[in-house]
Image (tube, rainbow, N blue to C red; front, side, top):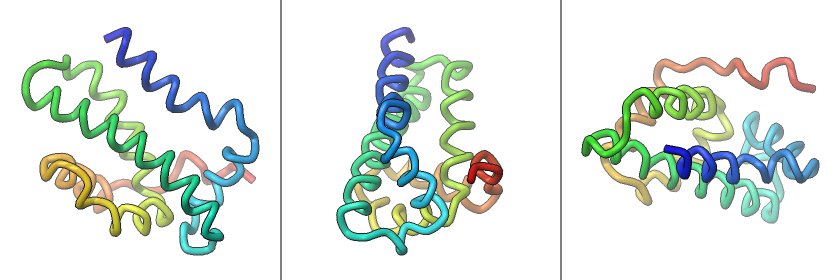
Length: 122
């Protein structure tokens, strides 16, 4: 579990250490389509890494290899992210890269989650 937590932190460290990427991330969550090509590639690559990791974790839970208590925190983070229209635009063209089980989870979250975590960020 410590290795997984460290890996997740490493993924998020990029946003902390790169102010340009952090600003880009906020813009992308609101509207992926409004980004220029290089920005789409950059944010898309980061989202791809995060979603691939989350997909692996989710399959670990389904297979009984990962404690569900640990997954719940990741799942809430994923749900908060997928609520944004920019993510949903990105996801529509990339979900075929992921497991069917994970796609079903993301689709459920997108139907029910409401954008909230970045709403007060200017």
